Length: 179
Image 1 (tube, rainbow, N blue to C red):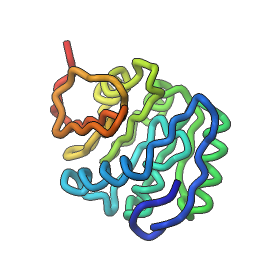
Image 2 (image 1 turned 90 degrees about the vertical axis):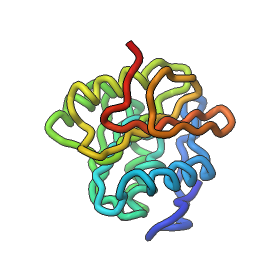
Image 3 (image 1 turned 45 degrees about the vertical axis):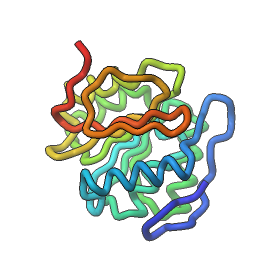
Image 4 (image 1 turned 135 degrees about the vertical axis):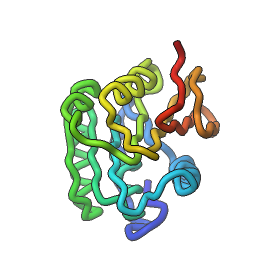
């Protein structure tokens, strides 16, 4: 795995290798950021990588000029990998080791321009996380939530893409959740 573009372009990052983590491929991340650049200004953005895994989404945003990165993962081993990757990329970030609901609760007073939600594929966390983020008003005006899942989500999105098993949903503040 590597950083695709920006100041840290080509920098290798360590994946968390086990059967509980599924790293997003370089190709998918590259396409996510190509779409994001048309939706939000990454330069100077505040970013939350909620189910961070090895931190690839947040580190890519950092390399492209995001000013504030918060990583969260419930898995303690993933958090150690994130810390090593952040240090290797000179990314001074906040790293949390919490359940996603506890992380959202802890970040209640902050807002983010970009929020990445990439939960385990076999979970129903994606829509629950989006709903809770909305309740806590964590998304800034003009911000974007990027959801990566293998599930078809009944949700109004700005843009949707499919890459193999990965389904990507780009949500704005007014994207409607299913009733």
